[in-house]
Image (cartoon, rainbow, N blue to C red; front, top):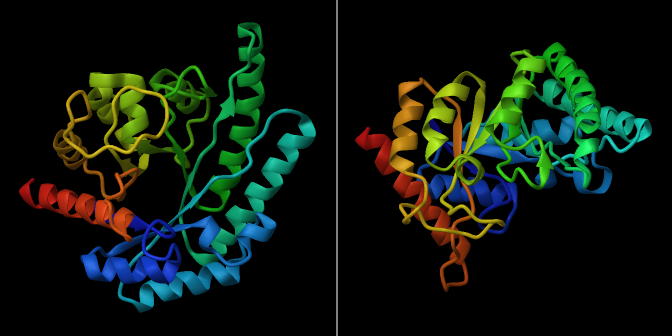
Length: 278
């Protein structure tokens, strides 16, 4: 297991700030994020040269990376929308491969239709686009870590049964998960530990967070009543041999100018202590 911090989530929200935070905290891994790559905000397309420069900056500081997080515009509203989605995804995967990264964490849900009768046609369009995306990822040696969504009433796919369907329909080794503990808790509750074991071969990145079974992204400290058992999750990850990156999310802000950083520093210390204990 490799504890990591997401670029753009700490300090001045730049990669440089993240690198400084990692070095101060003794964290060795950085998850690159698309919005912090120069030029991406303006074009929606990753520039391989800029991405290589970021990797060089991380490695020059004595740190490591290997993954990038990206929230693409993902649409199956029409054939034209699906084609545009696939075109941009392909260009970004090309940049990732050229830069030497092998894991792409993405948010890949689409809104559920209002009418239940429209859900199966939506799944058909979704799987067609997703299958082509995964085929192109496999050609480029890239693993797609789809961010787990737990709100069944909101998006497709959502909940463990939807990801089973996704893996059965597209059994490529490039088709995997970013296992978001908060989202999985929202959909599975106490079943999360069995789901974690079941999906272990498909888990390429992990987002660690505490939550209760509620809507929204409310920040919580960990070890809260009715929340996931963080220590047990780490224990299972160790048992199944998980070696990927784990980053913390949605920590409460402390009442200080750098309050968000304080919350994340607490999370990193907590995770380090668990890893050492185990």
